[in-house]
Every structure is written in structure tokens, then in C-alpha cells.
Length: 247
Image (cartoon, rainbow, N blue to C red; front, side):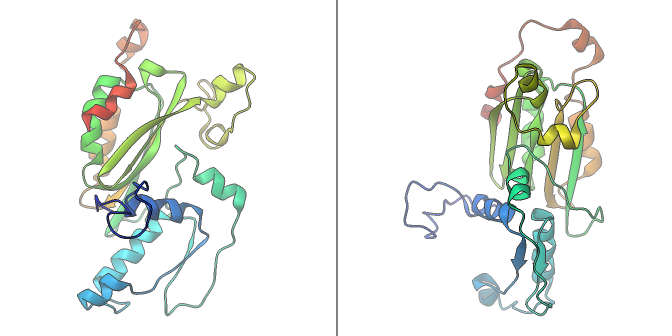
């Protein structure tokens, strides 16, 4: 997950233009699958820890459950009970900015912290907080309601050492007001009576000692506009796309 080399640099593909890291490739694949079959790989053989009861095996199995909570995880000694592939659901959960979290809140070697905010984020404060959120996080994903671009749904994704922001167009409620077709997944799952699907939802997955839920939530809460800032309605905020320069 934290390997900075591209797939080409690591020898996994013959296409030099493929600049994805192995972590990016893994997350992309896990997002679409309905079943994950576990088997000791090359690194396990080289380390000598090929037993399915080893600490590395248990940690890896747990991490897969955090990265693909929708999938049936099948060990080499387990009875083969595959999941059921749903194309519509696979497309919905892999849409940029959509968050699915593991159903179990229990903390083990790895955990996922989910936090939702109902006020716009101050772009300057969030810019300063983003490196702290990304540090030690295996996978960060979600959508942002930035005050300087309040009508635009901005997604964030961080996989290992890479973090990037992307505009995905207007929020569903904005698109509906403009009579434009728009996928309303966020509206259905996280819609609000007053501001529709506008809002910040972030999920961070990493080792439990690196993702402190209380610290993450306090940091994000501090990025929201204060009541005074909400009432002031400044004419100009910092450019939200300058956030990437903080990384």
C-alpha cells in the first residue's frame, strides 16, 4: 500500500504510461470484486511465514476486510462460499467520493474511522489538516464540501503515499435544481433535509495506532466554518484546488 513505485517500475506491466502504484491497483480491483480468495504469495514464501495462522496472515486478512467490506473473504482452508456480484452496486460503491465502511466497529490491527460534517470546510484550515490526515493512513476516501466552491462536489482519495483531489461536478441537489441528470447515491444514503447531499464525508483506514478516531474527528471539526464565518459569507475564499500543493 505504501510502495511509491509505479506498476511499470515494479515490473507488473509492460506499459510505461501506467503510473498507478500497486496500492492504487489493489484498491481499484477490490472495489469491484464480490469475493476475495486468500493464498500465501511470494512475499510470504520469502519471509518464511506461509502459515495461515501467522501474525502477518491474520493482519492481511483483517486489512482485506477493511478495504473490501462488501466482499466475501475466503481463506485457503475455508469452505468456498463466494459472494454474489451486483454490477449496479459495484458501480455505485466505486463512484468517486462514495464511502462504504466495514460493518464491524471493533478495533483490531487495522480500523476505519468515518466522520461526517454538515458545515462547509474552511479551505485554508483543511489545507493545513490534510497532510496530518494522510500521514499513516493506508486508504483515505470521501467527498468534501469546501466553502470556496460550495456548489461543487470535490472528492479526495489517498492511497499510501499519494493523495489527490478531484471535482466531480455539482452536488445532486444542485444538479436537480438545474434539471440535469445526476447520479444521486449520496442523496439516497446521506441526504439532509436542508442541504441535500452537500456535506463532507471522510473515511480513513490504517493501523489502529495510526488512526486515532478522536484526534481525526477533532481535527476535521476544527476545519468547519464557524457560525461567525457562516454569517459573514466572504466574497472570496482560497482556491480549493490549491489544496494539492500542501502535499
